[in-house]
Length: 210
Image (cartoon, rainbow, N blue to C red):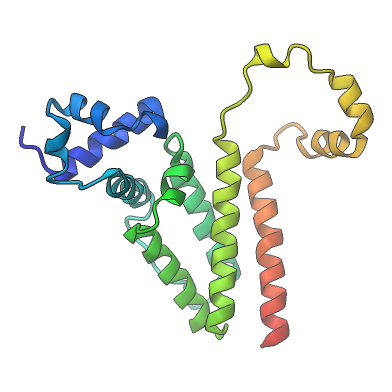
């Protein structure tokens, strides 16, 4: 099979799914493709370029099509939907948030930002404020997913953890977690609720300065 950039990126995504970002090395990727590492550099010049290509591939799976808000759709609701799509894209692959946040030249991420900022500007929000709102929503989304995808402690390391003492020292924290995650409520709800607070604050500021 002919080696081309598309095949290299597809195999890199498969390697990411199997071993996470730390497992995506040119040596391992070359071995999966049956070539020598230098051969990859004809198509992908370095590790940074490879990570950027993988980031674009991850985002393109969710953002194959993008469109601005409908005329009767509030920008707040549209931006919330956009953030939830971004979270889905990042969660679809191990370390998805690490990959995309590490990619400084992702064309797809730039296109998402361009669409979001231009959509807000079209609704009368000043450019500077539109940029701050979009960056805040994007960075909240990345931060939330980074935490979701973080490696969990080995249960063996927690065997001596005194949960009763922790609850006694942090009663409000424990009560808040217990109250929030009632049966049927998940981390998806938590993301949406936190996102609503972020966007509501941005909207209030936008309306106050309009």
